[in-house]
Length: 448
Image 1 (cartoon, rainbow, N blue to C red):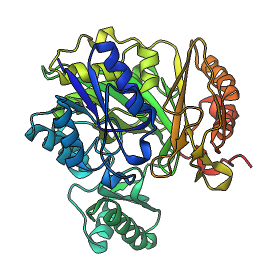
Image 2: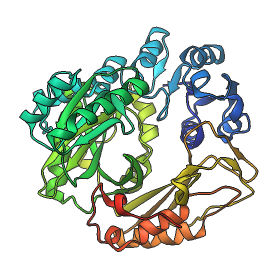
Image 3: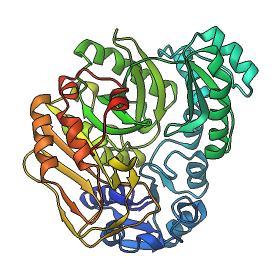
């Protein structure tokens, strides 16, 4: 069993991991940048080590400094959380070389699944449904135009090593392709240092459905049902829920089996997420696999009663899954709203600053994952998410009502937040009907 765990992250996910380790009797080491010296995760851990200046490139993305902190502290494992180095194959390999347990899949798996073209080809070979597209890297406009014509418009150009919505452009007609390709490739080169592209048929008005999987090193693989992540802005998720209003029991079984098949084909070990696009006719296509814990993992925990972070640590320790597919039961409905320090009325401008007053709701079926407190100053260097508000009800209708009530109780004074914007989403008749897709927010007006 892991004895001492270093958390190579910050914010609410670092706090979440520390709390799980306390339950499991595992010592924790926090790392923090100079800007995070007063952060909650640095105060809660058994030990905290400063790893550099505020910019993430000099702290949370600096592999050498994180490994030095690991070795100096005597930690025998690293949990990367999400973001930063969580899906960095070089970092996972660095851990392997230093004899430190990486809480996640091995470096080769991350490498293969991080390259969307390799991941796609793996799924095709395994018989997992994929969107029609290229099976080889595309480096220039001319080749891309020929492939787009073969695939059929509309098409989407994507960075092979992309993520987070960067390096993606859509071309609805042939005359739009050259600009879409050049723009996406330039963005990919700047964001990821790689201009390798691939092209897929663009699925119009789909839902974004992802399946949580758990896989141990003994070959056991299960899924924990789906999350609907269709409410998103600029490819960034805003509201997530489980189960999806669009997925029947029959479809869940079919998609779940495909998710397990995908994980097996990738030789996956630990917690992971298979992301699908779902059309209205119930056709679904593999999109990508995330090789880490997801921001939205709490909704799955609510409806299954399974602690995903705890399972991650157990699997990384070499333990066999204590859960079979037959054990997994979906109970009730859970919704998560991401609370961000931003101003929706001003094009979602980030709003760092000092929190003067803070109140979060509580009670039956309400959970708040956060690292902020009254008097805390949110630094301007990192992601704007400051909290996740999660609710659980017996039905979707009950969960919506509970979320409306909970959002109405949130008080965060001193900074701008998207709380009112989230309330408008949850109160929208189209959202409440369950009849929406990933275009939901494109015509949605933020709070004025």
